Length: 230
Image (cartoon, rainbow, N blue to C red; front, side, top):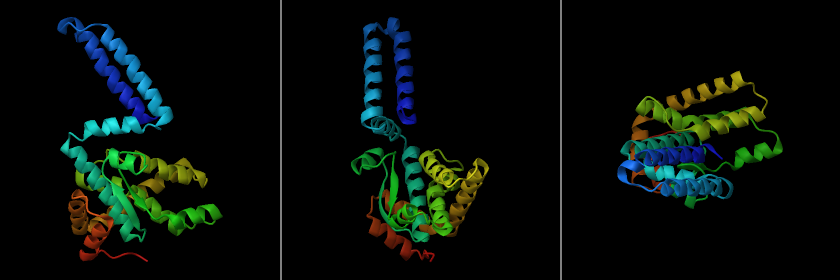
C-alpha cells in the first residue's frame, strides 16, 4: 500500500478503536466496529491494487478541504510551480487544485501543474540530457516547497516532488549527499525566482483561486512584467 492509503487505514483504525472504547457508553453493538474494520481494510486493499491509492487520496483531500489553510496551501504550492515554470520557459499545459480535479485528469496526488515536457523526455530517451534542462526542472519541481516556505515558513506538501527529483538524480548515479545538496540548491533557486517576482506571484495566486484558464494565468504574469529566461 502507498503512504496515502496507509494514512487512511491508520485514521480509520483510530476511529474504530474509539468506537470500541466508547461502545459500552453509547450502547454501540460490538459487531459494528468489526464489520467496519473488515470493510475499511477491503476498501484500502482495493484502492491500493486497483486505484493506485487514488481513493485514499480523494478521501483525505475531502477531509482536508474543510480547512481553509489546507486549500490555500495547495493553491500557493501550485502557483509556485506555475510561476517558476513560466519564468524558466517551460510551458504550463494545465493545473488542478484538488484531488478530484487531478483524478478527473488522470493525475496522481492531491493537485498539480502539468508541463509541456517533450524536450525533457526526448533527451532522456536519447540518453543525451543536458545539465541546463535538468537544472531547470529541478527548480520547477522544488518551487511548490519554496512557495510554501515563503508564505507559511514551512512546507507540508511536496513529497512527490522531492521523490521525483531524488529518483532522477539517483538514476544519474548521484550519491545521496549530492542528491540532498541538489534538492536544497533547487529550493533556493526557486525561492529566489519567487521573491524576484513576488507581486506577480500574488496576482497569480488570486487568479488561480478563481480557477482561471492557463492562458488567463499566463496573461497575468505577462501583465505583471514577468520576464521569461532564454
